[in-house]
Image 1: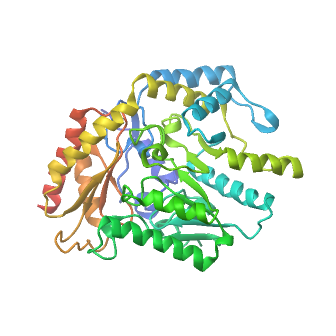
Image 2: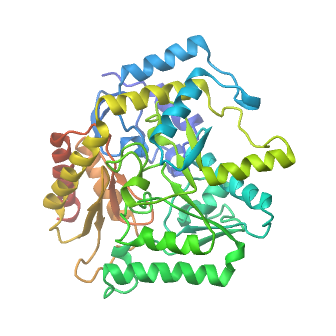
Image 3: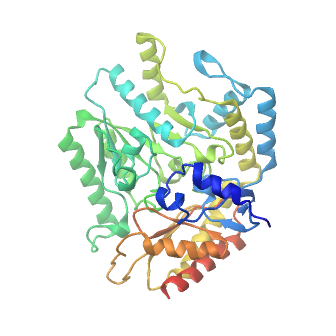
Length: 456
């Protein structure tokens, strides 16, 4: 296939890419890929290369690529009503229908969904809602938010502050005040190797309790966490973790935000990660799988408890002063409706549960015995392979990330996309929920081949 070198040149000369080494890319020292199509779990680039996408874009193309019914729904909506705002009680058939569909799937104690555009703005919305909540309740000092080291909640000013990865803080003057971080529920990287899983869970809960006591419970408004740690390493929580966290929060009257941007809409083999791990949140963050990224859309789901206070606030103070121009955008909402219909019709939540378990098992069989693999872990349609310099000593590579990057590049040369997770040597997988067992086997065998090439 002929390559459009003009397009490649324009790309390097004009396009400011996110999460990219800017200098290397602009100078042509870093690779580029121009994607032109996709179907199922495969993407196609402009040179005709077909790559099995082991990360569903960025954990987001849950239903897979090329679903014409979603594209057709977007086209119909654009022709009928491309845009109208959602302020002052305005809505569209698509936004109202999607709100109902989301709430039908959310935990029973949740009340309403506010639509934004991406997970970052949804978490900013959640923090504003919590600050408003406590002001209405006459608790102006109760404003601090506890997040977790290695957690990921976005790249905005507040959402980036909530994120517990140095990459998103360095030279950006983040985190901002009012944001605190407690320990990550990451058993493989526990501080004491002699800690059992139960010991580690008890230590995590004690560390959280200690942080709350130091800061003062009357100053802590909320705790935010992903049901399963995502970008920080794809780490399922240790047994008993969420039960212990929720007991502490309830005792100190601290709200719980469940960031379901990655885990929502089937990825855990349940509709939400909250259901999978027994979490009862006060607010939920949704995005990614809400539309399978066919159009931008996010949401903040609030519980009945929170909603009652928000209504009281407007009764006392007038119109709620928060909104985005594109909140509940009709095209995004139409994509969401069609996406959830596909998710249900193809029974993809069940496939995520069953094929996901098969995939994690296949990966353990393929690479679990490699001398540089410290751990293979996963849950639902999520899997991670943690690389180490010395398996027996649990000694990590230094600098972190360089080795993993080489393995992921070797996989790409074999037509498979995986992700080198930040601040670590973790190979991450989050395939589309339509993944087949044959494709799962290919992900596992390609990982083994790339490890053999790079590490022997």
